[in-house]
Length: 408
Ligand code: 13P
Ligand code: SF4
Image (cartoon, rainbow, N blue to C red; front, side):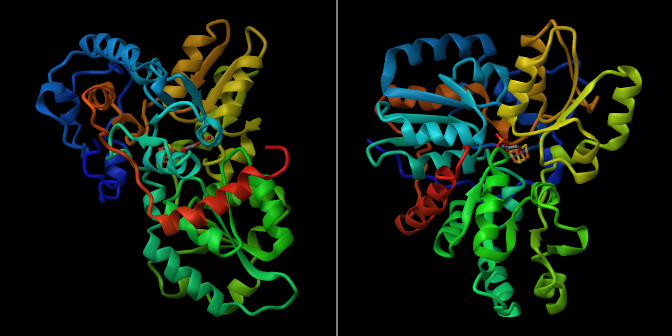
């Protein structure tokens, strides 16, 4: 039996909500849902009996229910999930690895995606028709993905094409969307000879796109777009920002014609907290420290870092680092804390002294995981992710182009 499908709660996440869980680090532990509800962020409604369960009661129940469901269910966990959720994941990874796994996992009937909405949606697109994908908390969106609404992207794509003229055999512009975007935007890319990328294959995707077009429209993260374009030798003067709230994106025809990349005005509120001052401070304290950051950080930060890469890359760098080495990391705190805990022989710390988890990832409280697991035992599929057929068709095409990139 399937409960009426629920779409993502249609509430864009605000910057204020994104910082709702920021704290000084002394009290970074899972509390009862009732206590966490006081944070001021919006949560998906859940039956009241889950509100007062202690983290230990939840843990014991998840262990029991998960065991009873056996191999019928696979739990995927993104690296940014809190420890009390990640411990139940069968596989952990970055958004690329997990989407690849979703396309390869054929045995499990149910995929529970502990991550955010765009990740679960991608798993639904890439998994087999007989599989069902569940997101434990439908309010777990992504504030960056919300900065590119489907309507704005469709309208902007039309305007950009009207403003540009064709000057060679190549297309004037190729749409490239970051994985952190709605399925409808991936679909627009699929339909218009574009591609999806993640932070682990943006270089290959850019290479692919520049073979086909004069320029790229990169949606929605201006920082990943800029950081990747810099590696292609594109000058700052050839990078323009498209602001969907301004007429013609705030650009003249000439500015658009002279560009090599059009960056959508979007950013990650978690990664743009990292600063050059924090890097200076880390270096003063530990002169031999390695600065390792995610490419969603600003270009000022990325250009001062020693290493830049996806969450999986960050994990592997620390794993392979020699004992005694120091690592100041610019990415989400749950991953940094996990690495520091796992590699106690290395000095691993977050560049930002303030503890600021990604508040949308954090909404996957273990009580939500228990709720959807208990639903399955009772014969209900709670929070099933569904993607319209037409959107599914073209988004799958742009995702497949990404999966087919060389050196993935
Ligand atoms: P990865 O692709 O590195 O997993 O990152 C996803 C994400 O949301 C980073 O903010
Ligand atoms: Fe979105 Fe940033 Fe959270 Fe990643 S860390 S899910 S980009 S808000």
